Length: 271
Image 1: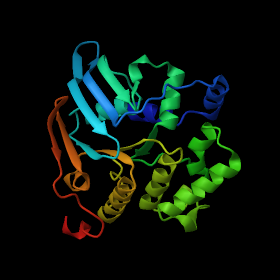
Image 2: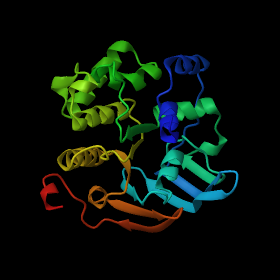
Image 3: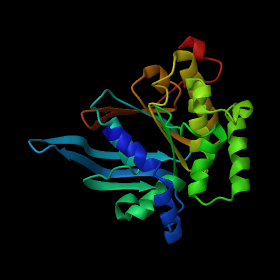
Image 4: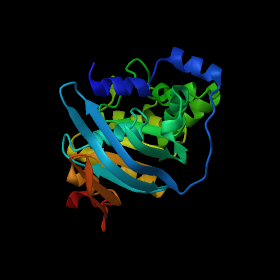
């Protein structure tokens, strides 16, 4: 299994492990802050044995609630390393990462599992849908782990699928849908527990141009409704949809700029 595969497996852990977690009823501290993400002097180093590789070098970053941000960079720039830390899939060597006011470094493994379930909605390049489950059952999954009542989670799953334009396909299996439709299911699943952060890792990487723009228009609509969305990408035309573009190179932030003219719905033919 690839490293990314292991990390994704961590996000969508087996039901047995999450059931045990539910029994322990681990709680999280609650804070109120306008800074949804705050990173202070963060460093990540990979020790390969023969040599140590710096993944992130003294990163300082703040993302406020309601922002629509893209994190850009080529392979090896550090953007994927940052994504793993933002998603609580990995820990820094030095520094602090505060998510919704919570210092992630201070949490136990059980609390990290709760963070991923309650605070973060994940959207991956390869969709990561459960092939044997229908669209509605895939969307219900995070709510099952969160112990939401069966009727309530079904109603919300249907509501979310209608919101992403798939109201007529709630009982379709993943192999009966196009790539764009599967990604819409993944976005609906990411919204299931109403998390404060939507974290999308190369969400258009497996889609054609038209489907990619449709997905980004959907993220734009979620942002207009108040969601905080962070998109990790290497594509300029995808970053063009966001309000703020952060560029990485060699483990460092080389620019952090507001986008003066984000692409909006109906204007995708011009990019």
